[in-house]
Structure formats: C-alpha cells, structure tokens
Image (cartoon, rainbow, N blue to C red; front, side, top):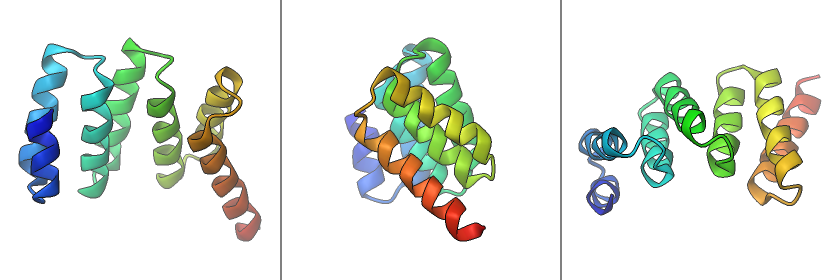
Length: 116
C-alpha cells in the first residue's frame, strides 16, 4: 500500500494502479487498497472501473461506508443520479452523521436545484 501511495504522489498512476490491484488480489475486501484504486481510476478518467472497484469492495464489505459514499459520488458523476442518492441515503441510514455522505448528498441536491 505504501508503494502505491508513493507512486500516486509521484504522479505514476499506472504503476500505483498495479500496486493497489495486487493488494486486492490478496485481500479482495481491503478498503485501504480499493479506495485509492477507485480514486486513481477516477483521476485517469475511467469512472466505470472506479465504480466496479467500489462495487467489488461492497460485495465483500457491504458496510464500508466510505466506499459506499464514494460510489454515490461516482454514480452521480456518471449521470446515475437516482442510484447515487440511494447509495448516499443508505450510508445515512447506517450512520446519520456521516460527514462525507451528508456533504455529497447536499451537493447533489444543490446541483439538482440549479439544473431545474
């Protein structure tokens, strides 16, 4: 993990992705690898791979609230607004004070208001 994080800081995204994927091959539910892998994919413009990474994580650990929050944000960014809201509301049902989900849902609600 440390190597993947170092590679990200050095802007060597492709190599970082390899490191995170290797960690997930050993521990499929390892959020400390899945979250930065999803973010690396996102930075590369590959939001669908980011979504798949988070869905895989949630398949192993359905209560990974940060993963579910990030999934909600990615779903929104890919135009799946209803699914995004469902994911974020699920986080808030489990943890009503989850700052990330509260902020993301507020951002989605604000954006929807502007779009109307």
